[in-house]
Length: 179
Image 1: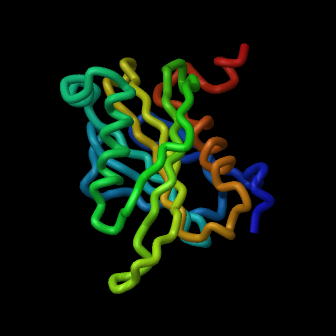
Image 2: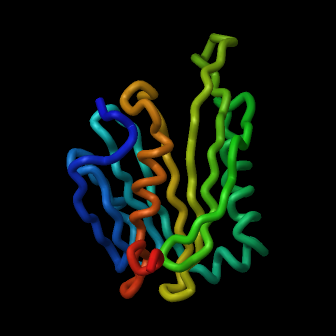
């Protein structure tokens, strides 16, 4: 179990021009149908907690959504439409700069049915980050699926640390943003 405050033992993962730092003991699964233009990859911890990175053509996203907020809101609506979800609460949404681009980081709590015949529900926390990269003509969405809430005392810190390490094109990194 991690202390939840930092990721020790990081390694770099890069694909189709984007780069991200992940814990060195997490498994990586690349969607075999993915391409440089559109795809996804999932990073999974030993406890089954997952962070997905999805990307696609920026022009498709900007035709479908007028704003980044609208794109994020659509993602929340997709969670609400899930047959196992009883209720969704957006707990927090804030802006950050990722790779020189405006990003929205959102924390959602979903009340999920405990079982098929049960009326009980479990709360499940999810985090997401949406941003657009005109340099690569892509949109990016990072999101988490928490399966083992006890693996990390504060999974939000793990998600934020991994998200902040994302670079979507060469020439920019978190270090250059801070200078």
